[in-house]
Figure 1 (cartoon, helix red, strand yellow):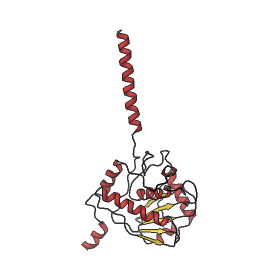
Figure 2: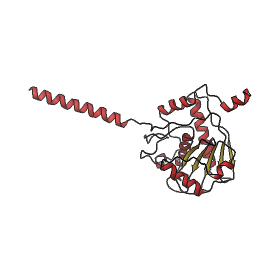
Figure 3: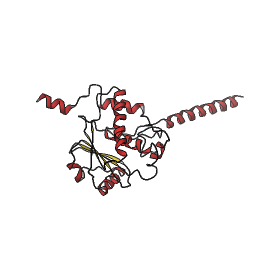
Figure 4: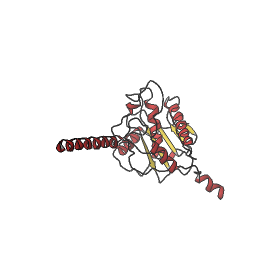
Length: 233
């Protein structure tokens, strides 16, 4: 009888541990890596062709992030968007994309980037590569490279919208997480852009941890340090 009770207790304990393990491993995690916070409201310049339908996705993405920042009580906002009929050579963007995937740190910006007046440059390309976001601390500029949307799954409704917002999230300091239901899901997790596919246009949500991290980077007291410095002179 005692042996039977002991076996039942061990079985129950195993089940409890198994459930606890399942819940722990099922929780979403945010991959490590410190983000770079802006110390000023970044002027956004979009490089591409006039009439490119992705232009509207950039505008919508900026609005999305400004709404998110306002919703958490942050004092930071993304700045105005300007469109310029100019390109960074697609071969250069493809090389930067490969470097990003490989985890390589690129210190020198592409030559065309320095000719663009702006803080956050978004290059809309007709080439096929993995879209990316990159920071060049020496020149204080950040670059987002957006691949062509003329291929699967980027051509599907709602995918491109979230890809643009995802890269903007990197540009303000967020890293990947491993929850495929969240906007910032990505490598090394097996998340892929086709998860954003939907007949209804909408943005995937943020993790609560990401909101708190953004508020740490950009608290309610955040001020445009560059403008404040100029006013003090």
